[in-house]
Image (cartoon, rainbow, N blue to C red; front, side, top):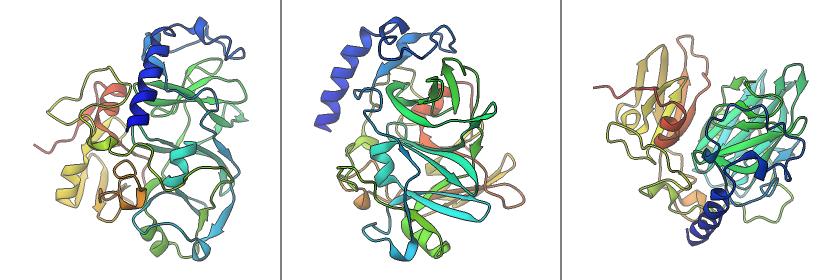
Length: 320
């Protein structure tokens, strides 16, 4: 956490001087800052790394489940299944890259993970008749990753899947019903599936650079309002649309059927933001969200502060 705190202080100092788009124009000459959905530019801060300092991946290699070694049973993966094409994206890789541009079942997708919000979302990359490729700006808004597309260099809010600055401002990516589960759970259900191979980067994959983060009292680089109802800022919630269910409620119940969805909780997935080695993180469980017909529903498992920041009028499903 020491490195995280130092980086945070440096980023905070830089962000205080950079609360206006003119400051970023030199770094982003192709971005149209005259178009924006951001009312308060001070909400956008540097997270420390520069543009592409966190290198997004494109067209990664995959191996068969039976050939994959080195993953702990409890390690989290993002599962995505489209048209019979089943793939697992280990969080140990996304922690260091945050975005994977891929094609699954013929659909161009962006698989994303923002460690500071615990937000793991997959999107269709087709927007307004073109296929976009995404990278990492190095900026944060409400502690959530700001992505950019390489075609127009518009900025996109990861938690919303929405363009917030640039030519494509107002465009929204279609979410896909991916979800997080443990490597053992994926392997048991999809022995014939494929898993992303280790990228060819010099990274200590499997290490959590945010050790202890999800046990903090306050989130990193966030100055907004804390969540209501006495819910801890870094407590996990399951967001479906504008509704959020506390993970603890789901853990106690095992399964809840409300608001047109069925949400189930199963033990066995390690927190990616707990101990120094992801595989050793405490068990936070895995979530599946399905509709009445049993089909997977797009959702997010994110920290409560981030849900409240982006959905301040959202509906808290507390079961009281």
